[in-house]
Length: 372
Ligand code: F6R
Ligand code: MG
Ligand code: MG
Image 1 (spheres, rainbow, N blue to C red):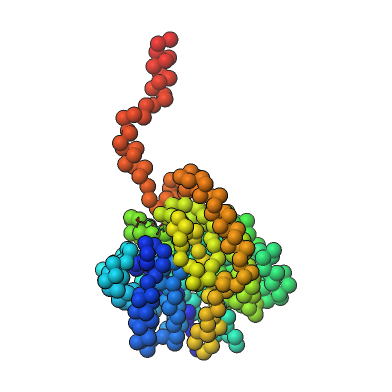
Image 2 (tube, rainbow, N blue to C red):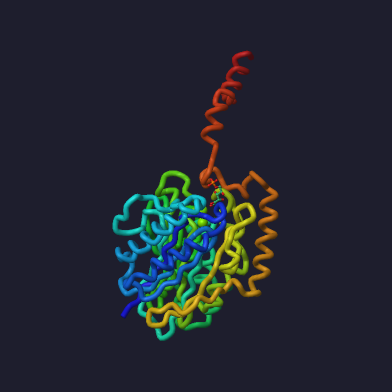
């Protein structure tokens, strides 16, 4: 029988500010998860101020009762968050009533259904203080770059490459690219991660699903600032898919992502242990955790907290150095994001206030010409 792995996440209140999740919320979430017959297994965790529900079940993706369970869990946690007056209690629950699917309602969803293999290693990557496009670069490296993934070159089951599904978040469209044949076409899109996001990846050899990510943009849903859409990504590994170490490798070189303070800055994505996933400096830097599980007859065996390993110490050091440099730029681009990408802005108000003081340079020139 097929198994479905669903990761559903939401920020429903920060402790303290936007830095972490209070233990009582995690307890409440575990209580809610433990009461249902729907799931084969679950693991409740957090990265920064986001609660992540990792769930296995037999019902396929977009299954209403599973989405409803997640929604009600977040609602129940919100009660605790309100009682403790945690910061932004209930912030990602954009709607008052559940309507069949959590997509478009605030929480982030990454789900995949597959035949459980003889051995089924998966990694759930979860990030805070950044957006879904943050996965584009690592997913590209894992599934299309032979300098990262030697399996693409020397594993006969990977040599044909992978198929990428990319979403245009602005136009709400999807498109497929085959790698390596269409690498350059793929890159012109995913190199713009604020708009084009890798949604899923399939093996060209077996057709199996290999990766899936959250792609919703909360600010586009809500039409107002509700935080960057701290994303999740699931990667299946081994036997014709990238090795666990190939999937972890891109995070050894922290890349710059959008998010950080007020969702309006560029900063390095720092790989950290789950325990260290509490964005602190300037509400950051953006963090990613990688939790590995072996799925055994639907049960989640784990997690293995990969970025707790000392082999990621230098990546953290590099991220801190990059953070230091970027911070020295203060309110200037490219540390501060481009005007179109900032989650907060005072631009309209300031422009309005100073409107009369802006003089057209063309009018100046015309006046000079007249005098002559
Ligand atoms: C970024 C984030 C924080 C807040 C910042 C200001 O995603 O969550 O950096 O944007 O702490 O928060 P407010 O506007 O709630 O005071
Ligand atoms: Mg928050
Ligand atoms: Mg968050």
